[in-house]
Image (cartoon, rainbow, N blue to C red; front, side):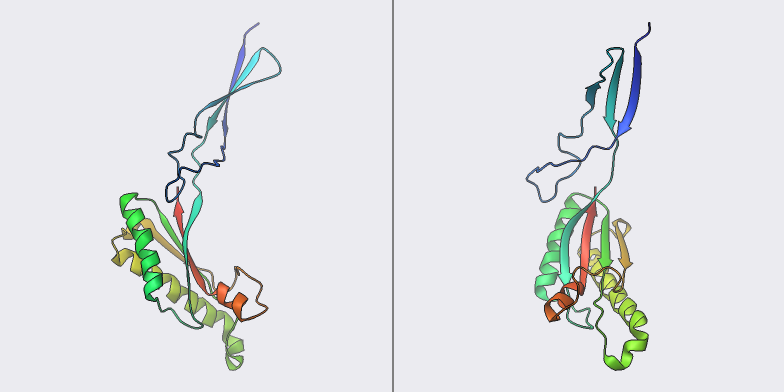
Length: 170
């Protein structure tokens, strides 16, 4: 009787804490694993598949109807830019808006919120590029108010939705 060997590809989820700015594919959790099947005639070799995942690098918050970056925001973006220049990885910039618009503009809410989230997204992407991040590594997407971080019940929760999230892809 021949011994059967099955080769499977499996996703290995990493719970590494490499101690660096971001955990990445260099951790030692990405090694083949031998799984012994209950039947002695079968041995399964599980080989990890390279799976790209997003890691939150930073969040920039904005005032109502604004795309202005203050000095603290620029310092946060400079930190991210330094890391990406030293470790070239794709950068995903995702812009968001709150549901809030002026009462008289409510019938144009969707267009207004999409416009401001595009401006915020583009401002952050352009700032990262001006800080030396290769534009070929940056992708930018505006989500308007379709992906709130918080349910808007007060001014604080509404302010948390006026944001741009910057992710690094490994």
